[in-house]
Length: 417
Image (cartoon, rainbow, N blue to C red; front, side, top):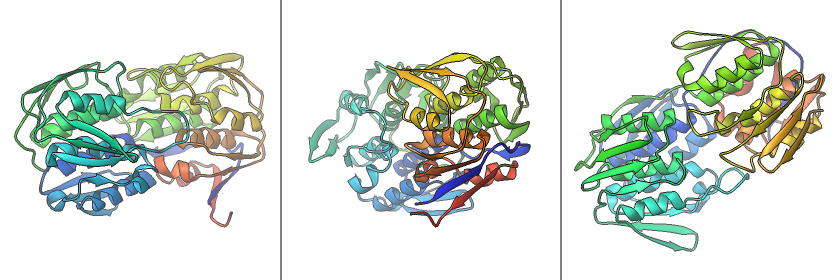
């Protein structure tokens, strides 16, 4: 398995181009399965997860062509509405095929999802929502079978604004008979783009970007093209590295998607300037600041690990509470191996800032934990070796090359293991 070798304490400068958003493109790819014809998606990040989704789409019968961040999907030949365990176990987002394939074919068979090792992410919201739309759901040998001749509009009220369930139910409902209302819907930019894309395909969705989405069912959708939004999680990761290591500019980014993160970084002492599509960050005297994650527009849980890495070097003590996923702290023992002083109780990390981190071998446990270890390794004295980096490749496009272009001493060792 590949490793990242990082020589720490090299300052960063220059600019970095932010890739398309992983969490936006995956549901968009599955939405393209709902219409016959060819759809073109641009600014598709070249990640393990996008390539896994392409494999899944080819298994269900779509013809795909992926080159230079352009993805062509011809869904005319889709004929096998089944998502097998071998693929779904590696990536939970595979579950996004459930709604679109059920809507198009009236039947779909999807393995229960796998993915990152941390914490349970139940699919109950997806299944209960589909049942309200009239689907018959059965569970057999680890597979979910959903059936419905035609779904019917319904009122669905989520207990928690689940991004995945909002996306799946929205895709299922756009061709349902009648009107569907999703209350307490997720408001994330990735859901906003998915709904806008569905409208481009001929859907009738209103309330986009609010917690109440109204969907008037249509008979069918047509293919459409779309350019993926910038990845706000990748952007946040580079911002936190810049807050520690030097003035950098992020390009091809949407600052409006990062309001809560930018406020916290300013509170922690960084200087930040924005344009409509760029963010420049310059480090200041790093102060300890408390943070709680929340659903959008709050501070993203996908940036919690990176924030803890940042706060481990801040002056003073701080708390980081994750209200979204209560047990997402597998990165803290690894950060402590580098000299951080972090204790976790329930869903809160208590961080006492230290003067420096010292390089050591550490191990990735999930996508965002990997990013926090890279940030810590970049600022640590000496050499840090990050293993199991297949996690980082699931969610970040050539992250070591981007950091190297900013002045970091980081390279991928392909000879290990």
